[in-house]
Amino acid sequence: MPEPYTLSHATIETAAGPAEPMVLNMGPQHPSTHGVLRVILELDGEIVLKAKPVIGYLHTGIEKSCESKTYSQCITLTDRIDYLAPLSNNLGFCLAAEKLIGIDVPKRAQYIRVLLTELTRVSSHLVWLGTHAIDLGAMSVFLYCFREREEIMKIYEYVSGQRMMTSYFRIGGLALEPPPGWLDKVKRVIDAMPGHIDEYEDLLTENRIWIGRTKGIGMLSAENAIAIGASGPLLRASGVAYDVRKAFPYSSYDEFDFNVQTANGCDCYARYQVRVAEMRESLKIIRQAMDRIPAQGPFRAELPGIIPPSREEMKTSIEGLIYHFKIFTEGFAPPAGEVYQAIESPRGELGVFMASDGSPRPYRVKFRTPSFINLQSLPMLCEGRLIADVVACIGTTDIVLGEVDR
Amino acid sequence: MDSQEIGKHPVVQKLKSWDGQSVADVIEFRGETTVIVPAAQILRVCQFLATESSLRFTFLSDLTPVDRFPLEPRFELNYHLLSIENKQRVRLRVKLPGKDPAIPSVTPVWPTANWHEREAFDLFGIRFPGHPDLTRILMPDEWEGYPLRKDYPTEGIR
Image (cartoon, rainbow over all chains, first blue to last red):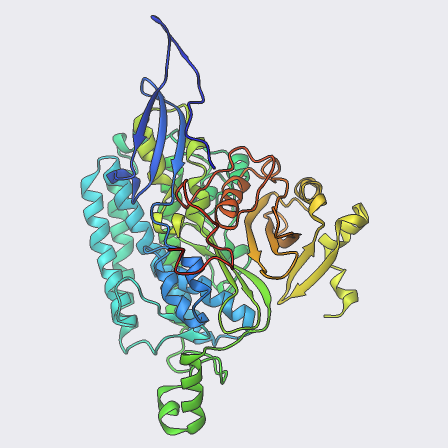
């Protein structure tokens, strides 16, 4: 049985003699915690002596649920892990399953996947920027960011039929052919985005209050970031150029021309710079992907018994009908073995560890979610700083509590 | 891949030349290398892999158990190591018995293992002697049982 929470710092010296530190409970219901995060703070006046994150309020046992579902059914659960970047999660899961089975996804599907996950990165960073800014008192940035995010959500809806829980990527490719004219909609959004990003930067980059609230706050050195397992913008803002898209390219990322954005500030401001630069980089990738996506071609691989046949085939051939029925009732059985597939989600390294015992249901699925690990750095970021900085530090780690707790 | 090629992975070769006892077996699957390490050796092996100048596995990506109930040894513990400098990954695996599974904590090597090990303790009931704060992390403190074990029903215990 775990022990109850105890004070770690016995006494504080004050003019009137030794005193106890004050314990302040922040959350789980607190607007700046971006969900249900509880932080136990030990304070000496306004200085944070110790911060202890307490999590688990959103634990829904997704990994356990996966064990009783077929591989295809699990995809719908992955959307709900990180609800701000559903397509990144879909991609991580599908790539892991494809690696386990040994499927080559057609190039067309790969490029569409790249385009949509980069769009997801932009939309996720927009939510981060908006909420981080509102935490620190900049109301208008929040409204602008959500305005642009809405346009991206409309693209999700147009392509997959869903605004948030898209489940659009399936094992072997995509769920369905993207509707005609979708690239025009994407183009309209990404043509407008650079101007919008300039707009946010006008509001924030040289804003004295913004600089005062973020520069030199939440310091995380490169050694500490690696030791604590931080990934994504949190790691890159400490000057470590590690990006899964470059280090272990997946889904044809090696064919795209983009730079890994880093900053050396190690503080909240550096993370802001990295994320803003990443949005611009993502737009660059989206543009390249738009040029590459062939107009015609299969949107998913062909592998009878594992990947569902086309609608047409299912209705006209007896084999197609049987395969369709078998895939959706009993699923398919990959060979026994384990794989680990990492992708660069907007928050960092999203790893999917999948163990198969040769049955149609995954024996074990583990989601190495970046938020869970990045949140571990919170005490490092805010201990010794003012209590107001805790809000900046929580915001800057860009956690999604659904992903932390799974 | 034949058995000769399996041993050629640079990590396996380094480990073997450092201490032959540290590698019990090597598995290759889908281009990923899994090194099976005797449980008693794990801390030493991790320390070596993290500090050896040509390997530099300074980043622990993930640590996750798999429950092979009712087989014995029941638990497999997978350590996913990453070397940022060499762009290399390797998986270490130890096997633990079903009765009181325990293995030394790797938090002295990688502080990030703190929450990973708490999660493994919380959901699988594996103990990590040497861990600074081995308490439940996702489930409530007073929870009974270990939900991700295979003998724990999906719908919960009522």
